[in-house]
Image (cartoon, chains in turn red, brown):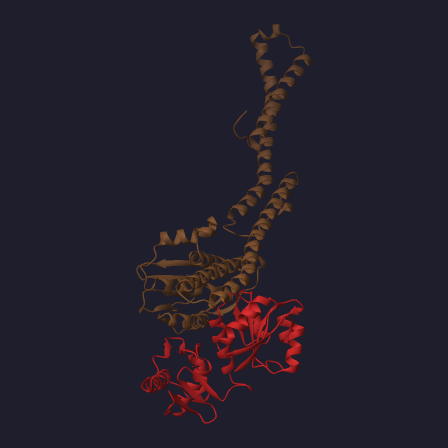
Length: 226
Length: 337
């Protein structure tokens, strides 16, 4: 069970977030201010931080910027600041994701799942999305516990899509990950890999999880882990 | 006296009166000086001489003096009034929500400067009032976010059809808050004259589609981007993204399931969104865009504000929003760089 530190000065909101996330498999400690958060981080280890920005003893963004070691554990900003540039400022300060209030617990849980799937020190070796499992060490995949026979680039593509499940992964990002920079990529090559992977996934029992957003990229629907 | 009198008219009238009085006094003076009696005037030959003398020494000099004076007066007045006309044109030319319009008081004649300063201070108060009004709307929107979050999270604990309906209501309120804050921000950015940056339209379109696609797919709707060429404009990137996002969200709402919403980056400096709805006539678009100017926020939800916000973003960029009902297409046209 992943452990979270929720930094939120509104007591009721903090409790509701913790309760909602508990129902989705996260254990949360709630800190009401930055001093509390520092104390909690000093004595326990967390998988991710959920951070409100306007706190009684300081600004969350400044705290995030000054954090050492930077980026560890990953942080998700939860804020009422919904301006056009605010998201960019938050990500620049070292946040891994940004969610504007109001939000639903479902949204928050999906973002946290994506956050914890990112590669990093704490990343789990096995990626799980719905019935799909992928072991990043042995580079082997299975659906409903039946193993898939994937070519190298199909496996690379699946790992990339699993890590960003629920989000659109842009074509260029995929091409950069799958091919060396000196390899020429024909426009159809990627589509061929995607359609082979989609067929293998569907044959193994997933139901239309791999989507194409034509002209933009590909997306593996995040159906949650069960 | 009713009716409007120009400065020029008054001056001409004064000059005429001064000329007539002057001529009369001169005649009187000459009469006394030369002891011209009425008896002499009855003599035809003497009258000839008197008329000749008077014409030569009174009427001609008066006319010679009056004509250049009238011309000079007209010229001086026109010169003095010209800056006032220019200032009036400048105020008239300020369209819609333009801020910071001021008269250059120093370019006006001294006599008009107190009036110009009074107009400027009035314009400033109008700007301040508008800014305050918007800041107030943004503040309220901001303050509503936390209670709405509490409401949304409490609803997550409930089951049943009622909870689902309430969740949709919360989502609608959230959209309205987002739109109000977006609007306040566009105006604030415009007032702050932030420098635009070089923005690649197809890259912005890709980003916006990537953001919207997961929710669209979850609702069974498809998005598509067509067009490969890079097209750079000078703009505020996040504002352009917000305009496109609004168009796509509108399009998703009117498009039946199974038909994709297509974003076209087909022409330089333009983005279009093609949907599967009934198409929007220019007249209807005008009505929707006018919503903001009439400021009837109360009668609309966040969805209704969308197109008005898009139009305002486009105006702030010197571009425009046009509709093509036959192609079921709304198009953002940015000015050429």
